[in-house]
Image 1 (cartoon, helix red, strand yellow):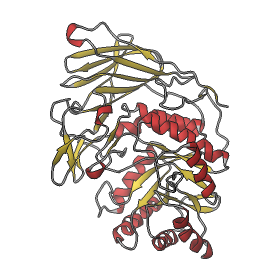
Image 2 (image 1 turned 60 degrees about the vertical axis):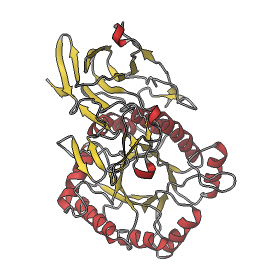
Image 3 (image 1 turned 90 degrees about the vertical axis):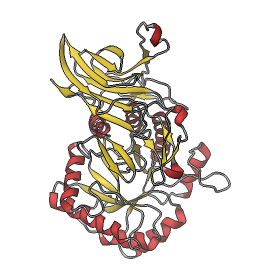
Image 4 (image 1 turned 135 degrees about the vertical axis):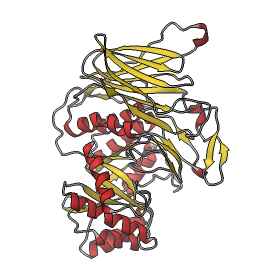
Length: 469
C-alpha cells in the first residue's frame, strides 16, 4: 500500500576557491525504504511514497516505442538484426515494442520492416510481444495493418484482444477503423494517445482539469489511455503523468505511462528540455508507480531525430547518421533496470553498486545545427533552461564516496546506501568518475568525450557507466 511520500533535498557545497565562486554541487538522495524527491515539482508534489511494497495486484509490463521508420540497422536490416535488438531490450526488462507506423500501404517499407520484426520475435521464441501504434494513418491502412498480424503469436493480447495504440488522433478517426475491425470479427483492445482539446475544440498539449475531464467523457469507448510524454522536463512529464493516469484509472480504464530520457528536436522542431541526466527519467518512473499505471511505454527505443532513444548501438559512442551525430544513451536504459524491477514487483532493491554519468559536450552558449541538411546554425527553443552541469546517478549497497574530476574541478560526495542523483558544474576537459569504499576504488570510468567549446554533438547528452575494479 502506498504511504505518504517523504521529500528531502540536500544541497552540499564545498568551500570554493576564488576561481570557483558560484559553483553549486547538488545531491539528491533516494533511500532504500523511502524516496526523496529532490526538488519540488512544478505544479504538484507526488503525494505517495514508496515504502517497500508487495507484488502489484495485476501484472505490470514495460514496452518501448519503436520507430519502424528508423531501425538501428537501417531500412534493409535482416531479421537477425532485429533479433539482436529484441534480446537487448529483454535483457533490461522490456516486454515488447510498440511499433509506430506512419504509413502502411502507401509506404510499403513500414510493412516490410514490421514483418521482419514479427519474424524476429517468432524466431527468438522468448515471448517478446509486439503491438501497433498508428501514427495518423488513414483508417483503411489501420485496418489492413491490424488485420495482417491479428493472429500472430507475438501480437500482444489483453482481455483476449490484440492491443492497438496510437500517436495522436480523435474519436471520429478512431471509430472509422474500430468499427470495420469489429464488424470483421477483429476487435482490438484500444489504448490511444489522444491530445486533449480546449473549450473551443482546438487540440492542445495542456492537460487542464476541464479538458482532461472532457477528453475522458468524449472517449469513453477506449479501453485505456497512453500519455505520450517526451517533450518536457522530467518533473513536468511526471506531474502530468500522475494527473492523467489517476484520472483515467478513476474512470476504470487501463493507463500506460510514459518514461523518456531527454528531448532535442531538429528542423522546425528545434527545441530542448532539460531532464538533468537520469534524474528526470527516474521521476517519470516514480510517477508511473504513483499513478498505479499497469503499463509503461519508454518513449522511445530509437527516435534518433528527437534524441529520445535508449537503444544501445554499441561502440563507438558516436554514430554519424542522417540525423546528425548521435551519442550513446545506453546508460539511461541500464539505470532504468532498478525502476523496471520496482515497477513490476513493487519492491525496491539494489542488487549491486553502479554509477552512471550524463552530460552535454559543450556549454549552452555555443550554437548548434538546427537543420542537418543545410547546416543552419542556431539555438533551440528552451536552450535557456539547459544546465551546464554533469549529472550522476549512483546505486550503492553500502556507504561509499563518489569522486568527480571535471576538467580542473574536483568534487567529493560522501554517500549513504541507496539511490543518489548528483550534479555539479562542469568544466572544459575530461570527465572522470570514481567510487571508493573503505579506501578501495570499486568503480571507475571516464566520459567517452571531453567537454569543449565545439558543440558538434548539437545539445545532445552523452551517457556512460562506470566499470568495476
